[in-house]
Amino acid sequence: MRPLNCCEIAHTEAVEDYLRVIFKLAGRGLPVTTSAVAEQVSVAPPTVSAMLKRLEASNLVARSAAHEISLTTHGERHAMGVTRRHRLVETFLVQVLGLTWDEVHTEADKLEHAISDRLEDRIDSVLGHPTHDPHGDPIPPRSGRHVEAWSVPLGGVAAGNRFRVQRVADDDSDALRYLGERGIRPGAVLEVVSREPFGGPVWVKVGARRHALGPILADVVHGEIA
Image (cartoon, rainbow, N blue to C red; front, side, top):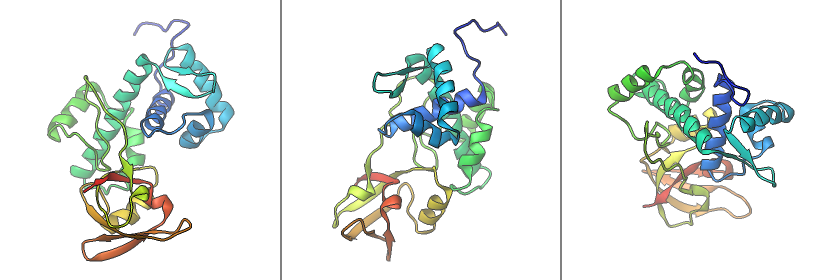
């Protein structure tokens, strides 16, 4: 392995975690700030600031005058690589090992750093080259174009509409378990029955059953009008 020069940074697990978090936040259209990254990686903002300086010096991220963080072309390529491994591992754990969709995010966080390119390709082949993981997140290709943008959140859909779930944010395993037990997962079609005022729940119908989803749950479910 060739030595790193003064402007390069080793692609450690921490570096890959930061790149994937920035990629995820940007893909959701959320502000990518030091505090937002700190919340995602569960470390103090000063620690995040120090890492961001290293990533910027290595041309992996750029910071604007407004202190927002973005991936460079070089950084995005690496972020897509680790995101691809993460989502392939999640899919493998569900489809092959039988884990539930609320269990796999934490496990994939650990395994995404350990698999080789060869194993990644083998997992992809065994799974039949999946395009989406169990949460509906698109799996970036090894090369070529990738679209990460999120669709409409359930929380913004008016009553009377039918809504097809496409993606569910995977940050909260308890939320995933709750939604999954009610049949609210990618591919499901819901009927938005009513919306309570003043920040109250959205009532949805899944099959013959009605469920009330508070604003936090309704905003992690994304999809399209069916």
